[in-house]
Length: 394
Image (cartoon, rainbow, N blue to C red; front, side, top):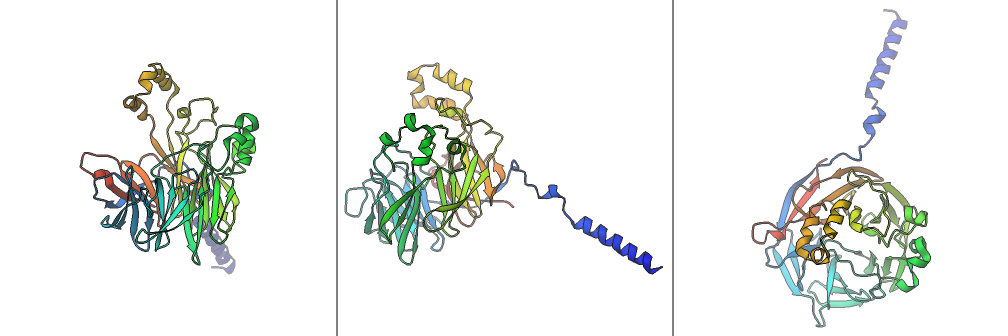
């Protein structure tokens, strides 16, 4: 065979090999509506009589900080759910707090709890639950209201060189009389600062806006209600996620030690969430508002409940106030409020989840990519204190 023929065949073979090895552009496109699969890989049972929730997890110690959901005790349990310590933390004593719902590990040797009060002070305890200090909180009364969610932590603490830092959200940081939406409209989102940062070096609390600049109601100066955003913060990566309840965007930031920078908007979508931003005068149950955002490993989980059809609301309300105000009748509507989940990785939506692999509520997201689900009430005694560990099947 002539050299020219060999050369031609070599070039042709190389071209075919290169073409076959190249991926088509379509193969790299991620379907944001693909249903991702999660699996249960472990569980933890906290065998106590009272209904409890997990407040936090300390990975190095393999310990959970646990609170009675409606009681006054805090529990410290190991990774298998075995009791290490039990403390009556709610009360009037010198080592107690009048009332609280949230608490976290502060490093490996301390705990920190957020008091439910007009100032929302923080109380720091040692491992024996002896109170070490009280930190002035970020709130200024209860003007904006009280929002209770047993499965949310509104602050993230950490330590560096023995100094304490706290990044969080607090809706009661402003005087509602000075921020009347009837007067300032969408300007509310430029002026109200519900994010806070505590630095023990300065012993001060600074404030910043949690309403993203690119969030549609803020950028268009349109008033659609308070819509206080949710904040999730990963200490290791110093990466923050902010999720306004209204709208279709998740916002990611870097924390530079003083403020959130490098805002990145991620478009969110779901087949059960295609409504336009609603009129604030309409019943909020007609819109599938986001209810929380949790970070787990490289991912963020945006959660919402499906909207109730308008004709169902109208029929329900037509039965009169005596009927609608009876909690026993609320079950007529609960069936329409189904939890749904949107998963984000990096700067894009990578899929959705329409049903958890087990019935329950998302309690915690962990840095190793685990989500912890508090089991729904069941027929077995005290199985409501069963917590499932689930992870994404990749």
